Length: 360
Image 1 (tube, rainbow, N blue to C red):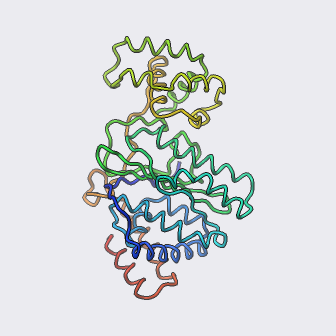
Image 2: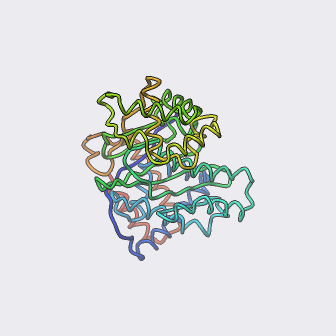
């Protein structure tokens, strides 16, 4: 599947970046991205976005607090504003954002396709955007509700996603990185990597390779008559189940399940990806189908948190996981080179270099 890049887990900080800081972030990010795109091509910039080490270092260079959840939304917002006037020239388009802006992503993609007369086949990008969000909100149930989704794409059709979810119980945010060229399947180890500061204990990961049999079982269930499945659910409520499952009646028969089952029975999705994309199939319904498929088919879904990288706190001492120093140093060296080439005043460059060197 290639090198993992990932997800970072960060403490939630409220408020907004000061306008004076945001304006400088826009200017500096524009200069850096322009150098990268002209020197190495726009696709290389997307590859960098998919690397959490580089993304964190980039945010630090721009002047934002490196361990804050606000880094994600502010950096992506600065990039969107910075690249809008250059988009047609350098061929990098930024869509979506935080809260309501995230829901406008498909329309913004279509607007750019029309404005730049890009091929009709690029409309698949709107599907990719929706499916990426569905995976991290429904197929990967780690306790983090998505509230930020930024979709980046180029004139060649390459794409990347940076999105973030919030955990209400522990006040942390988790960031998810995707890179289109490395996605072999949206439902089997699709992330270019997942990493976080805190490993969650209660996770249902249906996109893990260990969950392949469960995905097949759920797909088989979806083609059964709804009444057949609902009868199995009624039986399950009377069983004494394995302790690994904390099951309630709400888990086994959530609101709207029958409607979803009717839809899947009528449409007969060809694969799990097609099923996941169905409107109305939410986390609770998918969890119920997972539990029933495990009981009927004697299969087991992955319940391991795929997060693997500590960045926000304590990574330098190796707990819970060590920082990948060679990759991190490479990211910093790359940004130093870009800063040297960027058309910026000496004072702005000097400040950016100082911020970057604090990461050593």
